[in-house]
Length: 170
Image 1 (cartoon, rainbow, N blue to C red):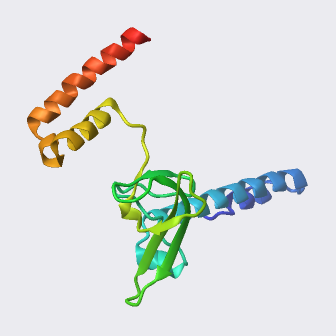
Image 2: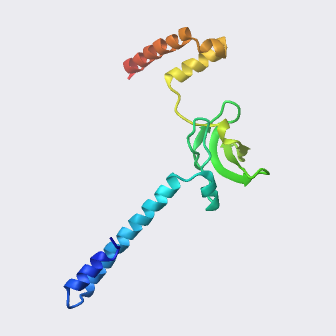
Image 3: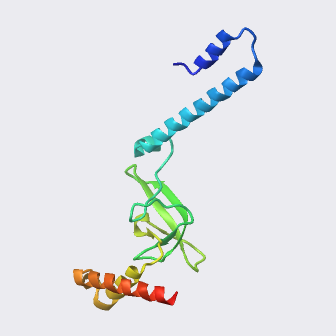
């Protein structure tokens, strides 16, 4: 099937050429062509590997420690560095031909950003009751003891009690 089959059928069936009919067929051809091009681009990008992307001058967005891509404006947390907002992403070639990536994170209240590797951060999420209790246990008894089965069960139990207390206050 050719992209112009409809046009050829229309011409064969009409002795008088109608400009309006030709324009509507041309519009449908253009729309179908645009859909096909977008679909091909989407398939090419979805299945692209780093080498084929590099040939086009493209790179993948850097990802956090959980594998979530960064975008400018994302709020991030770190166990080692200051929490803050992503304000920049930098890519540069290294000596072996690879690409190194850094993100600029401006800590809350700071005027300047610090440049760090992306895997040192995680996207910020509002702490849950379990997060707060786990952090408290980590600080009180030490990291390794806070992740035992007994501690995990206690966190679940007390988190449920705190949620019930919130419902009573509301």
